[in-house]
Image (cartoon, rainbow, N blue to C red):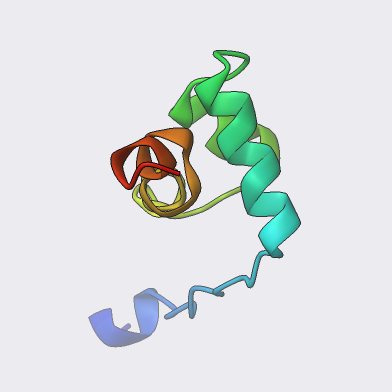
Length: 68
């Protein structure tokens, strides 16, 4: 059997998350209810940087930085 046929390519799916969902995850991480990895497991979030990106964009530290 040819090695190329031994493995089947599976396209990774990309999910679109609602703004409300992102804020919920960010809140749970910031309040200490969940860690980043635990949030990924709980909600089935694939990317390693996804939650960190949400924290940077939507987290309280971002709001404090800009004085809001």
